[in-house]
Structure formats: C-alpha cells, structure tokens
Image (cartoon, rainbow over all chains, first blue to last red; front, side, top):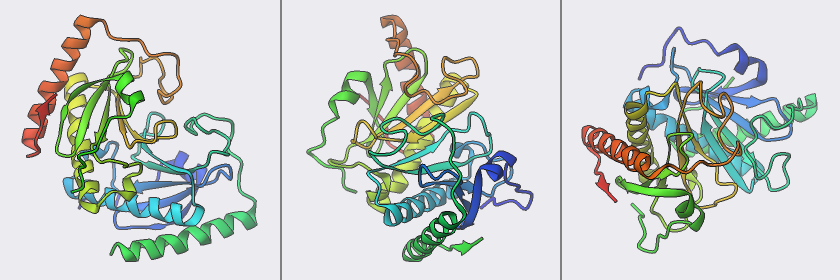
Length: 151
Length: 151
C-alpha cells in the first residue's frame, strides 16, 4: 500500500465538502449540496490521479471501499440509482464520486455535474445527514471487515 | 462468478456501439462517436444494474478489467485524462464508461454525456480504431494475466 504521509486534500475538494471519516486507504467526504446525497472517496495517496496508475492492491481496496460507500448511501437514502464516477477533468487529485440519485431529483435523468448551483445544507440538516451516513458507513464497513473511523 | 447464459445486451447499448471483444466477465464495446475514444465495459451478468450488488469476486474482477481497458485506451490514444463512470440513469443494464479525454476535445472540461450529438466514425477510421484498440487490449490483458478474445 502506498498511502503517503505527504497527502493533502485538494483545496477545491476541501471547499466543497465536509469530512465524514476514513476507510482503509481513502477519506470519505460529504459534498455540501443538499440537492443530492453525494459523497467522495479520496485515496490518501500523494499524487494519485488515475485508478489504473495505483498499485494493484490499492485498486482492489478502492473497489471494496467504493462498494462499502455505495451500500451505506443505499441504506441511508434508498435511492433509485447510484452514480459512481472518477472524472477529474477539473480537479486532478483522484476522487470517486458516489451520488444517490432519485427520479425526482434536480438533474434526473442527467448526470449532476454542471447542473445548476450547489445548495448548502442547513446546519441541522447537515448534522443529521452526516450522523446518518457515518452510522451506516460504520455498520457496512464492519460487515465487510474494513476499517472505518470517524473524522 | 455469476456470468449468466441469459445475458442479452441492452438494445440502446447495441445501437450506439460496436463490439470489440470479451475480457473475463465483461464485453468490451466501442462507442460509435468519433469525437471521443470511448469504450464500455458491460459485465455479461443477467439483470446486473449496480456494482455493489455484484458478487464480491465479480466486483474485484470488474476492477481488474477496468484497469486493463483504461491502460489500453491510454496506450492507444495518450489522452490527458481518463473518465471512468457507472451512471445508468437512462440504460439500467450495468455498463462502465471509459473515455479518453483531451483538453482539446468537444466537451472539455465537462463530462461528455449530453454534449452535442454523436458523430459516427467513417468506415476506414472505425476499422483502424477497432484494430488499434483490440491490439492494445490483447497485450495489456495478457500482461495482467486476464483472458481477452476478439468479438
């Protein structure tokens, strides 16, 4: 595993999100956009930009972490569909979007990127959503025998 | 592994793409859009809609296949960035987009979905691109000790 000591979260990701916790190699962030339950998985690996350039062990761990985060989002929100994506055209630091989508949401059936503007959570709603997600992440990670600690 | 005998490619995916070959559990398709080198990985598993609902063994194999396809696209086109995504809001059959992106392409820095209209390859260009990709896929899959056969 190549988790680096020099890792620092990209300023744009930091600005747009709140830290939820850490799985085995990745930080889990909640995007501050109340329109969509939307998390990021960011491997804490200095300089990582593409999945195919990670060590094979990290690639497989990232898949296990992605599945844990997907299941936690499904348990927390019961969406109609998940969208999982590594794009990175604007923020090169490797980050995997996990978005719980609903047929009734603001962008359906289109992808969420570039649609309208983010709507920040109200403080009480932010706390409630973070607690709900953290609880589900803890339970799903434990069932998958993956480590998870709160931020 | 749960690769099913009843698997049939979704009509919309069939309409938009050309079959390149098959890795261990997934079909590899080339989208017929000359604006972007754009492949799909479609696990041949009847009824599959979400990565997190696959068997754990299939999840890890899908990651390995995704890495092979990513490396083949990089070797064939030397893009500035790869975009890898499982969306499925419009076509429920599980399919993973792999798109070689360039700072000079028709959608940069935005995602490609919903941008303009597909431009079908000219026949000679289609053959050349398919051959180039198939050759790279064969070599990269062999190096990763994954099976690949041409369609």
